[in-house]
Every structure is written in structure tokens, then in C-alpha cells.
Image (cartoon, rainbow, N blue to C red; front, side, top):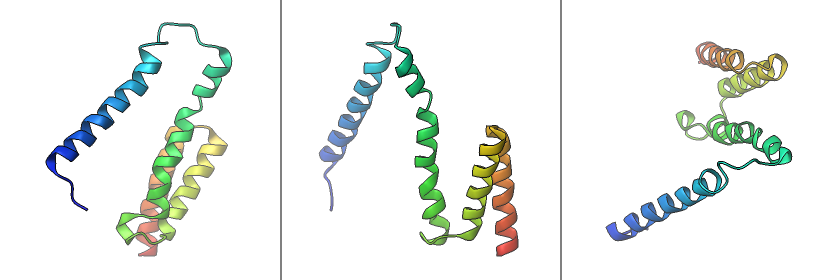
Length: 109
């Protein structure tokens, strides 16, 4: 499927406008108002919900292996999840996951 230059620019401008309107609805319209406690509680979990969505494809279908499962990445994800769950410390989970990834890549390959 090929797109003309006008179609590509229309898609880019449309996506930019949509993104701006979504952000403006939160920041521009209700940014200075007091929000209810239940909404603030739900908004606190947004980063926790977004990060697995960003990381899961890199663990389950990594480009480095052509989309095949890789034991090294699964081990690193397990270590990161375990350390994060038990320590409640993002940096500890981040560094332990990185160390586990490089160690398992070195030992398994």
C-alpha cells in the first residue's frame, strides 16, 4: 500500500491535532480546577498501566531475534518484575533487570 505525500501529511496533521485535543482536554480545560479524589487515585496508576504496554512487545516479540521468544529477555523481565514487586523501588528493578539481561545474554549465547 502506498500513500501520496498529501495523504501522509493529512495523517500526520490529523494525528497531531488529535493528540493536542486529547492533552488540551486535561490540561487546558480542567488543569486549574480541583479534581475529585477518586479521579486522582485512578490517574496515579497511569504510568503503571503504560509501562507494561511499552515493554511487553520488546520482551515477547523482540526485533533482535526476529520476533521469536528469547529466554534472556524473559529472565530479565522476570527479575525486573520480582525486584520491583518486592522492593517497591523502580531504580533497583531497573538496574537488576539490566544486569540480568546482560548476564543471561552472555551466559546463554
